[in-house]
Image 1 (cartoon, rainbow, N blue to C red):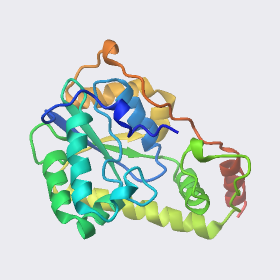
Image 2 (image 1 turned 60 degrees about the vertical axis):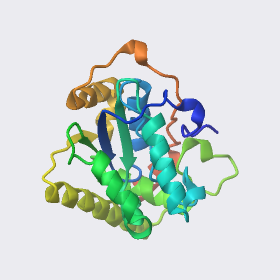
Image 3 (image 1 turned 120 degrees about the vertical axis):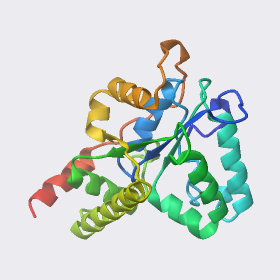
Image 4 (image 1 turned 135 degrees about the horizontal axis):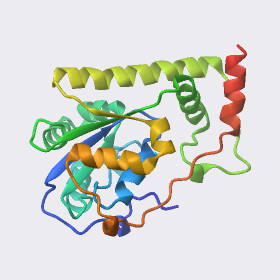
Length: 247
């Protein structure tokens, strides 16, 4: 299974990005889909989770090694910059909190390089309008351990509907969005807000909005071939939604 973090998907190496942005979001918001929409343009960097050091994450081998985490971050800054100089980072608040606890020096470096305290940096904030669907998606993923289409298989256990899990997931979403909003307010930042439902309806328009916000031009000739992101089966989510609505 190709995740997109493999060296074969690197851009040509650069000394440093000229323009950076943070794709700020929370789990189950459709951020992997949006990150690939932006990446595929070849003009908006490759905004993946370069700070995801969870054991099951893309850089899980660095979970207990601050030095390796820093090395991986520096490698991303060299190899994941599109030819026009743009670098994007996708991050969740929980990832930044983990860095604060385990590698505060790297967090300071990330904030200095990506968060708009420097010229040219921007924030793209992805959210979902359907809060119930968001909470159900998050709850099911946490219970099943299935976060991507590639992890689905016929023999996997299907989690039973749990109103407690949905409520807990909703609180987690609210808490993480509150963390973003607090950071935006503290640093006096204004983000470009995108909605998952709009991105799915017209991904090309979403990419154009981000490009215009960053002040870069999209060139169809720059498009790159990257792993496809398939939508997970919605059958189970629909069952949960029906039960949730029925009380």
